[in-house]
Length: 74
Image (cartoon, rainbow, N blue to C red):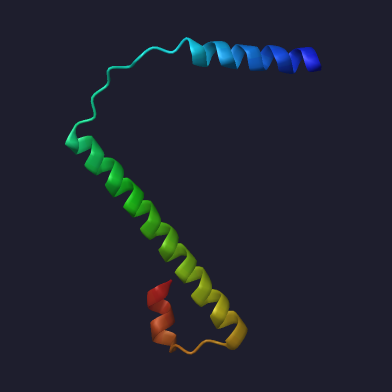
């Protein structure tokens, strides 16, 4: 078991030590796509937590919306 972990750590260190530069270029369009993706993910998580919180609150304290309003949320 110890020999296996030593071999694994040695292999990982060898791979990391032998890396070469990528010479990659990230243009402004790619940067904006990354930023938009991150912001969209944050908005989706926020909306999901908000819906979960309102549904939990409605189950605990009872629904305070009319029947017509609930049909629009589903």
